Length: 478
Image (cartoon, rainbow, N blue to C red):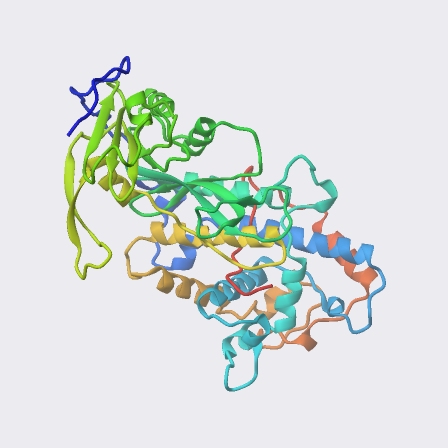
């Protein structure tokens, strides 16, 4: 049933024709991802977490350790910092591999992973890297040089990693036709100038990121952390789309972003849009003035201006939708209702059904006392998922199995071979097993440590103009 006399100028009750924009993109892996012929999951993760990126992290970590020792020349004789030695790319892979492992081997405290008690021992951790070495790498883990910090860039601490990783997201994959924009929240309760509060999210306090995903696979194509900058919603959406306009994509979004004006703007860029709509976002007055008592369950009101259709539909509550590409018709679906043991058939507008199938939210929640380390862990979790999407179905059917194989590859050498360690980490003695044990690290004076770090880190390679955030430290590192 349609109501109203069509008193809104330019809005009509009948004659709606969806915009049909041909899809011209070729979805799937691109560039290095398309050229990679491998069945090894770690090779796909290394498309994002490259040796170039890890070398940057190693250099910044070594540099920060040197800066710390220069600022604190006097340390206690039994301080754990006295055992510091330069970290290498190979050792970082082992470190991050163990960090990923803590994501699905859950323990309430970090030290329990190295417990020798037969009741809760996890021998693989002791076999791969000593607890003290893991903790000291975590202590000095760094992603950008503090001495050249830009106070106006709130993401400075993670900017090189963030830009690098996000650029890889866009370079290596072409999304399928249906896209989704939503907000990812990385939980953070500490003091931070750009921490946000969103009562409608499962994670209510934290760092918010605008995320553009492939609706079919969940692949994260682009992301943009919110740091309080003044930009319109249209500018945010268009920046997330990057190189995708002009190819006939369909974008699904919630009511935070949508408006009639944005629909018309995206249509000019050959992108269709569908999503829920807040009040006073350009809809006709007859729909703007509706309340939940004006319609009975299943009743709807529709208006269109020849390029955009707006629908108000009464479900358990009044739902308002905007679309440029769906028919004005109802579709039968089965839904759960309170008090019913089986699903109950119900009629919904076609655009509502399609939106429910295509909108998605992918949280990655980790714990840390340093927001920058936690945010990089958040980024690396997305890298892991994107790598899994590119890997496809091949011989691994689940994300968990994919992660397990990555962990096995990155930790198989138990840090690094004897010969390579002597070349890359001066002053570290190893046994044939390659295991890291507390006594294996040569003790250096603070002055000697700082000198060694400066010697190795003065000429750090610049990471591509994109990325910041590093590896995922999967859960309980605090």
